[in-house]
Length: 355
Image (tube, rainbow, N blue to C red; front, side, top):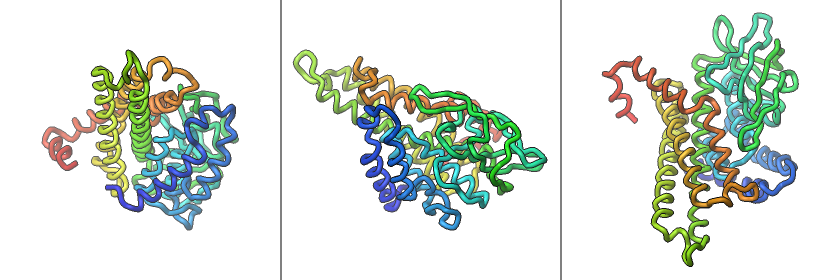
């Protein structure tokens, strides 16, 4: 449930986004010079390290407040590693480690990737599709050894970073850890493992997707009321109205499922079966909404929506790229089915009805 505090924090974030990262302005920018003052403003407000306690260098905000910030970030389709820095700081804080200043990302970012913590205290392995790795100074890693899990902070420059981009043009890199020495590390507490990182990533991307869909709906409705064809706004045509109604339904579904998942994680002390059900369901449904919503929006806008000059692609391409982060919907649909099957038929309805 969203609290007054969540609204206040999200409002602060939205004002910063509007001042420094308006989609129309950033889409016209010739380079990324706008990102530095934008990140400085976010840092001054304590938002990148919102999930880090004050004694470890953060602002000590709640998970709910952080998810509210990510919802606002989705509504502006911000092309910076804010979600990744939030999650990286959260991991470090849970392991009792202080967060550095500057942008961070997390690894692994795919559910099947493994990073090993060697007996000599170094990291080995490869992580695919790590968001914004080439744009960050540090990577927070969840690694495994023979006895459990380790949370480690590494300097990005110490890793091998392969070039890569999402369809939206954001960095998405293969990161190789070739016997990398961490800057600091700590044994992960019980329950903090690769699966926990994946679930946090699923909910973060779902919340961002729902926010992006909100803006896409607003843009589409406004354009349908302005664009005139055959001497009347296209929003007066029944086919367009039907498409906009379908888009509104997808937005409502994404907001509901992502909000429920964020609320569940914010109120949970452990990543249990309920958290898994909520996070996986949110990723599956929001990814479906992103696919359907992008298709409808581009139908409404027609050819102009595909041009680089128009901001629509900033939202549609970005949220379509988010589908793959931390595992796509096909992977999590299969995992959710296996999870439910393992519990047995007797537990299925009580688990679903409890939500």
